[in-house]
Image (cartoon, rainbow, N blue to C red; front, side, top):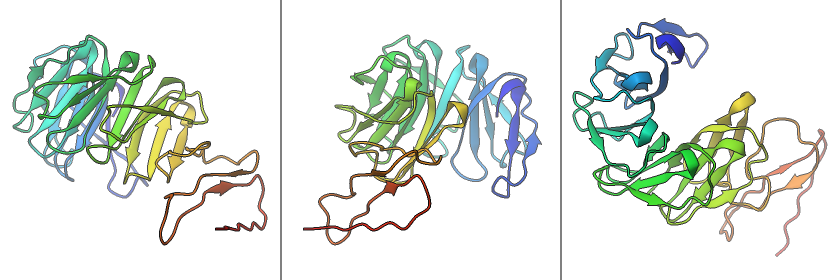
Length: 267
């Protein structure tokens, strides 16, 4: 997806991409698929497009807004939430046949959204905005992020554990459902756009300038939480994870050149 209604599709892991007809010339920002067939795209001027055949055809849905929509998330094929400028939050419970505006309590641009289950979700945006719902989006409560930086993306693996990313290399982490957020060292000042975790420990962040950051410790270590896949400039040894542990733990380290390395652990 992209400018002038661009949508591309791959069926071979990205070896090749085929252009799809979106039926729109507007900028498209985010896409979310609940299975291989059913997906939703959001974009400029309240644009929402839906497919039920893997993107072979796309149908425009009425959003009821002219806001610039920047994020979308579905917990199942029917229940979805879209967010955008001027604090816009839209909700559907019928696969997008109709969308209803929700009160966000802010006029800030909202850019990223993640749900841990059907009831509990988080939205992030400008000025360090973080909003939480525990009732499918019927109401949203502001949380203190501890930053004024714009947050672009969020990912929750369960009702307690989540990560948000944003401008100036910002990475925030919560382990209590967002009641408090701790800043993590990303090792970059580039704008970070999106984050995805496969479990509480393993995550990837992408950003400007081709930035790709990776952690297998949930980012919760003293230094070097997220490792840029470039060549290390020096030696570093990360905190083991998990800690405490029984019966095993993992250490992550980097060295500036190919060489034999020995690690010794003492009790």
